Length: 103
Image (cartoon, rainbow, N blue to C red; front, side, top):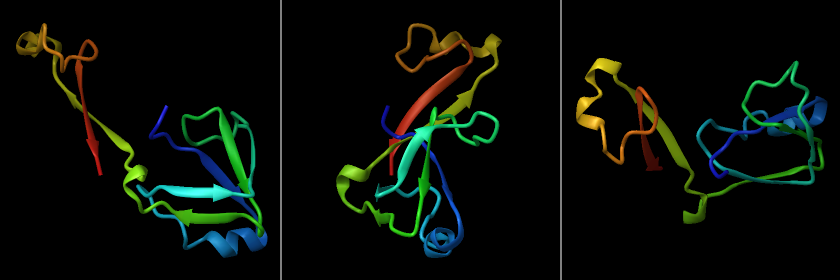
């Protein structure tokens, strides 16, 4: 699935190196890190995997058009007001609409 989040952990020198690099909502190319099954006790995002970066890892912001990740937005509607949405392609669930925008 495109447009998902992954948790990354860094310690010591890696934490110092990358602390100011990451910004919420941006997309990055990451190499020379470790990918493993996430420890469910400590995971903070909905992903079965987590990354560990070290001082040799490389992080580059993806600034090209291919880095456009869809953003999911919900518009909650009470069930008794769903009438206009019945048989509409916008209806996704019992009580929510899905709108995909690309930043």
